[in-house]
Every structure is written in structure tokens, then in C-alpha cells.
Length: 230
Image 1 (tube, helix red, strand yellow):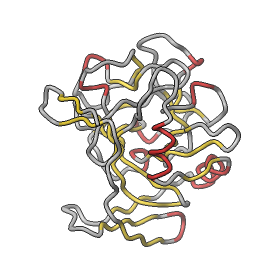
Image 2 (cartoon, helix red, strand yellow):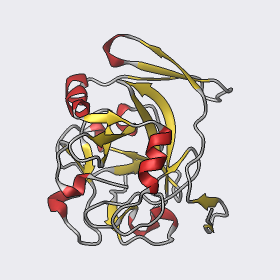
Image 3 (cartoon, rainbow, N blue to C red):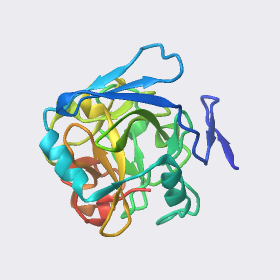
Image 4 (tube, rainbow, N blue to C red):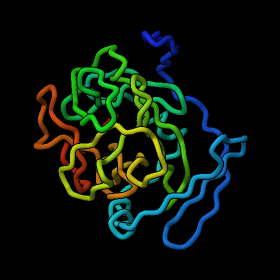
């Protein structure tokens, strides 16, 4: 197992961590309440989305991925990589676009909340590392906070927008619906989508750009190559 030390002094391990056991309760309207089996400082998490129909439609063509299956899929690698990507539960790694081979990044390593996210050739800069931290299960999918190593902030959609083409941002992690993301396998090709809980849209690159610094956006999920990640 390779361990890479970043400048903040935390260990970045290129392997997935075990999931904390969680008990679930559900209410009407797609609300999911997740309660940790271990003591949690902030208690349970309750999340609702006013765009449930859009979310269900987006998930219809996807297969839920267990952590074990996701580890196996990622370990197969993808374009430009021979090792697993995407870290879990406090373990940090790259999130790489299948089309461009570039990493989800924060421009200039900014820690300012609201900074728009980009793709950039993968490196060892702190802002290139992310962890998917499990929060709850809803619609048979696991939902995560996707947290940046450098800023400690979450992958989010500004103003909980459901507009296609909205550039995603980093924002201090909260219980807003747009702060939650799922990983799903496209049943048509076996590739991995990253889906927003609030909008039901996928993480994507506009126009399938391979330009360094291109915005990372949300877009209705499709089979365009830039809609897939590893």
C-alpha cells in the first residue's frame, strides 16, 4: 500500500477505508435519516429534496454500488491510472475524469468558500485530493459528502441550483441537499457516474473539454465520455 504524505501532515492512502456502520430510518417524500452506530457529535442527518422525480429518473439507469464493489471497480483503474482512485471516510485520493484524464481540483489551492471547481492535470497539490465520507442511504444508493483535503470543504452546487451547466463549488459541509453525492454504475456501459442528490444531475465537463482549467459542472446524466469518473 502506497502512502503519500501531504504538506498538512495527513496520510493519503491509495486504498479505500471501511465504512462506519450506520442504521437508517426513512420518512415520506424520500427523506432519509442516517444515525451512526457510533457516537456522532452532530447526531442524525435528515435530508430532503424538492426534486425527487428528477432524482429518481436519474437513478433509474444506474446500479447502486456497495463500497466493496466500488473498491473493486476503481481498482481496475481507468484512463491514465493503474491504481484505485477516490478515497473514503477520511482517506483522500484523486477524482479523475475518464475523458480528459484530469483531476477534480480547486484553482490555486483556494480555501475560499464558493470557489468554482475545475479539472487540472493530476498532481500532488493538496487541493487535488478528496474523500467521499458516507452520510446516509436513500433510494438504495449510498450518499456521501465529497470533501477536499486542502480546504476541508464539500463538493456542492451553488444555491442548490438545478440548472444544467451550473459550475460546482466548494462550500463548508452542511446538510443542504446539494452537498450529497452518490456513485452509480451506468448499466449501459459499466462506467461510473457521480450524481447530485438535490438536482439528480451528474458531475461533468462542458463540451467534453480536455483543457486544463475547464469548469466542472452538473449536467443531466448521459453517456458522454466526460460524465464518467474514476
